[in-house]
Length: 147
Image 1 (cartoon, rainbow, N blue to C red):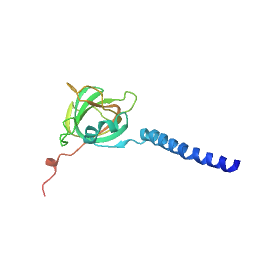
Image 2: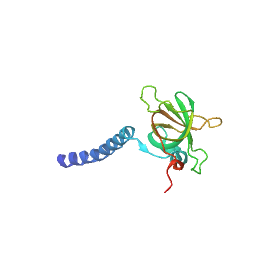
Image 3: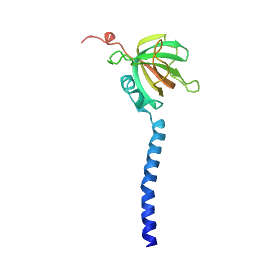
């Protein structure tokens, strides 16, 4: 009798414990392996990605300061599809000495998404903080030889 009660109690505790550990582990790994998203995804579902580490690729930027620049997705239907990207001072960014505005640069950005960075009046509502950025110049289609 005591053994069956103990066995039922152990079964009753193991299931919730493993569930809680699984959810906690998934949350911890989400910061290690960032979610791949688009800027349009972030604009359409900001609360889903708030304070999560995300990875995105976007073409073009406008640099505001040495450690901050703006990105936007003009193809997105959502007018909030823009964000401020704030560099991580401790990280090595492969941004280089590019001009202040480059539409032909593809940026790979990893950072923590903040859906409430500003009220959105004079600056983008969203921000990617502690961002690690890699830039690659994309060849223009007009520069390719015609067949």
